[in-house]
Length: 468
Length: 70
Image (cartoon, rainbow over all chains, first blue to last red; front, side, top):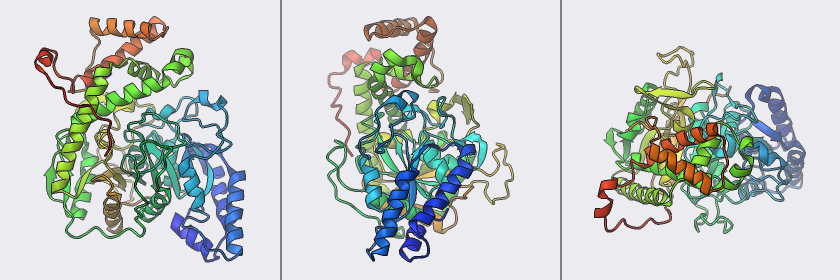
């Protein structure tokens, strides 16, 4: 599948039609998704109408919007008119169909994009592996025996497999960045409050973010631009105008890039450390720094997620416990028992870590850290071991992403290939040629810097996707 | 600390049972045991950001717990 901007350019120039792009997309999904399990629903009837409208506009000589004819899909927690919003849960399959599209789906439509379906995820977004007992696991396109990462599992895998050039996902504690890392694609978790979540099934209101995945930084930035704007329906959505990134500007030469050590190095395995070293060299970063509140921020994220998520689902947990995902339902119930004093203390810790991060941004413009401790684990892994510590897989794969979403910073996840010359030769982990991502972290509202850094790594040939 | 190193104490088990009951949950003993393990894990992580019990009386101002906004 061609990139998003290239598709739009070709359609604009009459080299192809939106209808032909849609047919190509449909063929790819029908041929390849059975093995990957990215999609839980397709929306080809709607897609035909959207594609026909684009082709009609071109035929009338109208100028076309930025993403005209670009096929895309959304994590199945976004409302899509006419579909039940699953949020990965079987119990939601019986819910009434959404009466309207989520805000960001409306914005993609306004940008000319063509929605082809809804994507698999961990139930209620509570997991980092993309394994769903009810809808099956989404498999990693680079190794079908491994997880795609989650919870935006289908969103990352569909882009990595080239089924669609862009997708939308959500990130409460790492659910864009972890699957982007495991599947080897670019993902953007914007500043908390940047993009509207209205029409999205919530998980943890005070931590939920939404954002795009893509195969190139230019496509990621163009999609991000199409998604921006205020929305009073989401109380957290900031009252900021569109701050378009447009063509991603080069990273300014004087950009000060710090390498996050401490927590972010302690929980990084050898491959993740190699990825950071490679990215640091390409960005001219030599100084290490530490976010001392990272451990506390991670703990705060864990407690807030458990408490808010548990509270959200308490009534259904009482009545329909057996229908919940077996891998996460006990954690949800336990979360609903968290005392208020713990939650309040978690908010204090969050604030402290945020203030410390702002101080750090007095010394650095951009921070660098691994996106995940290691390569994607194998499907069914209950635990994984990192630097001698064995921890539960589902709850811990986001240990390097949680501290940053907890304090709302914008992060672009860029895919690196630490063992990657494409030969498929194994390293000591036996992972072979798998991706591990890095997080490019900026001060609040500076998504432009995150994207510029990702583009610099992409231009250097260090960060890139490999379609499978 | 390693978050996996979390084992329910008697006090924690009693708390979970009472909290489940007060919130109207009805579970089998097997489920209660599994939920208790999960709660112990949350508690072990929460403990890292909570003031130690012996210091609580000495703290006069915990400071605000603001709603987060970047």
